[in-house]
Image 1: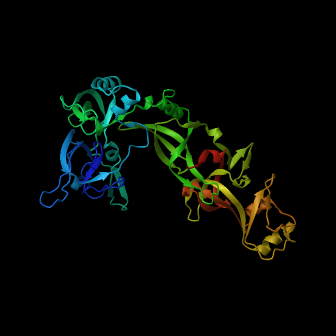
Image 2: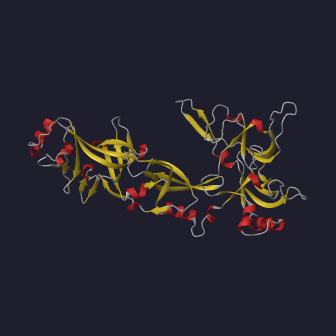
Image 3: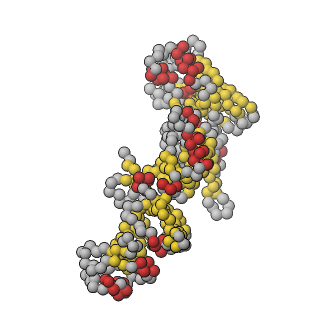
Length: 457
């Protein structure tokens, strides 16, 4: 049995891509990289008559040369290639052709007439693209800049196949219209595309096994217009709850909670070769990101995401960061200045609140209500929570503190450092400690647990 099938992707052995490793960036002279080939036909494996050694199969392949604006055919020995294990993108826009399965599902006879009717009724004037499209579309090349040695990345689109429209069809062999090995029809689709090289339109017959059917974004859902929803959200300054590509677990989570979604502020609609994407600002990474528009996104308004902001002015009174009563298990968006003066924005989930005491004797002396508190050892850390009036309530494991309340003046006490222990989403949910005095801005996030967390199955 053949190791290869029509429609599979292969590359010449000198190509840097290997099996599932198709996200390798190509440096130096990237033009030496050969195209990704799509298998059209396969000849039976043969062996050397003298030695019995496997000398491989002949594979008839196709690729598109973007510079010349032409599809090229090539016969190549299977011993000279590597198979690329690349599945269709996660989005639902690229669909495998399977005429036989469609007829069987419709409980129709697998006759030539029914195959022809299926193509005429369902596929004429529809979009198609060569199966190598995604590998070629996301192929990257990198070069160093002269200034600081950083790598500059750009697209390597020399073999990117065009988006085409089906305008006709034919059988490859007028006498033998079905494959005697697989029982599938030997159909070629006549495709038309705009040729950017010749600045005109070109046509070619291509085997349907080498192509994907391209779904229209506006046809993915009957009940919703996905593009209009995104367009309207931009006009109305709306937000979306969006899935993240690589969910991560919160460090220390006992219930198996993962961060699976983020808050996104939509900014623009982008068309990328054959599909639409939404450019948005991601509040987990605090950076711009992009997502394919192939499903409805949960829309949400700003007032349903963000709560009180600190510092702020309320009726002429300045509300400071220290007025925020942090709650355990709650999410906050903060602006933080680290020890090196770097200012970053991030979302955190509060796990613990504690006071770092530099001089315990001075601490007891300053807060007279605690002077009868005599723990066995001088403490460096003590947990706290907030009272309704904004004062602090400190905790002891043995319950030995006579009066647990500390005044607001503690926020200005140089002998203590008030700390927040939290999961930091900017750092993939890892534990981080934040000094309260280094937090420049805080904003509450409403129902953050429901917004960000999910369970992976």
